[in-house]
Length: 358
Image (tube, rainbow, N blue to C red):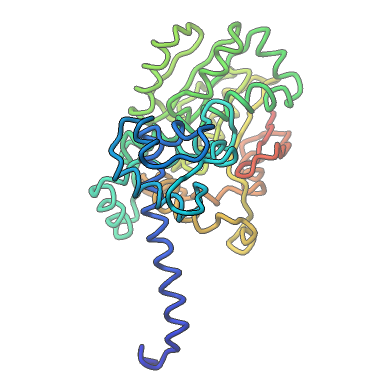
């Protein structure tokens, strides 16, 4: 076996740099979170080039801390700077880091607080036991991040574009339909739909008590009367045709028993109903995902979130983030008795949409 002394030092150095770039990304991720949390990106939006003193005057924050944060953001090429003295958030940068209301590209909300050490300890134990973590084990931060990321998508894509693309769906919702969102999280998407379609009745179910607690608070604040939430898994849906529309948005691959949920959806969906499923765009195996520029991140998210949830029960399916390609989902649907399976690509870089009917 070759010793370290036998290796090409240039090759070793390049590999070490590759490793440390991930350490850099870890720290920059935290600074993106702080920039979002402290309102720095929104304060810089349309403000032109700013010095640390000028940003301090706009935010009331300490100049020296802002100076170092600005330099880090400039070095990461997330802010424009030529001299390290003035820094600007460009319109493109604002679309990703500041515009939470009107940009489908908004991403700053995905950068939450660092994980609690106990969460990391439990992940390490999962490698020994094979049993993962539930979404409530991830803490409130995970639910808040998901809620913020779904908000722009619900307002700007789901209601105005995606739902009208499904034949007859908007008309049914306008007339009055029974709708259930399985794995609804904090209910952002469902609340957007409930406001847009007041004649329909909406139920959100999710096994996360944290997420459903947030959903209840949002309903109380909104005053919506056609929307309710329950702590429950998808496999508990009624055993008779009840719903005109079933929704599952980015959650099937997280479930310990997705086949049970799909079977329950098949039983609870009316004969003329539709199941709209959104799930991660992926290939059938590792090499099929080579062209995904975020493949490494997707597998990392799987270990720390999606697969962890999908293995949170003994003998869980463990699909993970890239574990539900179209052919696998179609197989599950056929097995459950569905007769129609249509794939829609709405130019969502991360997801495919499936129109599934009895």
